[in-house]
Amino acid sequence: MAEERQYYDRYSYFKSNGEIASTPLIKIIERDTDKFIVYKVAETRLDRVSQTYYGVPYYNWLILNANPKYGGLEFNIKDGDIVRVPFPFLSTIQEFESKTQQYITQYGK
Image (cartoon, rainbow, N blue to C red; front, top):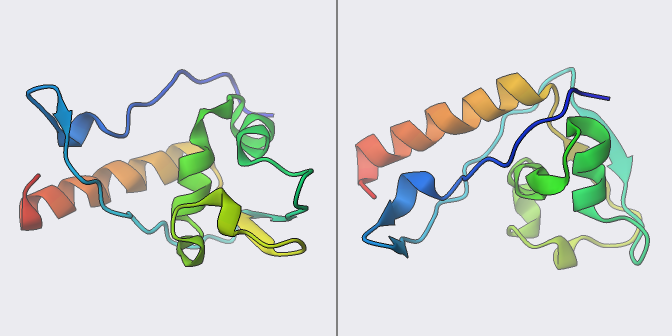
């Protein structure tokens, strides 16, 4: 299990005057080190998967970004689907930050 991490505010890039602008889906590349789980409806929860692989339950959104076919909604995952868990955490979060900065540079907030 990974060392414990603190909450990461993925909305911080898109906050302005107390409002949060629409946030883009930042796709996470597939790595040989990624983990894969079989999703079981009414049993699997991505916050628990985050806890298992990242040490905190806050990164379900990162797992969803790595699986864009679900449109950012855990409820769209079907029983028996294989879900990719981006791993390791540090390089994944660095990729997210870099791609978010690229998005802002290209499109603005």
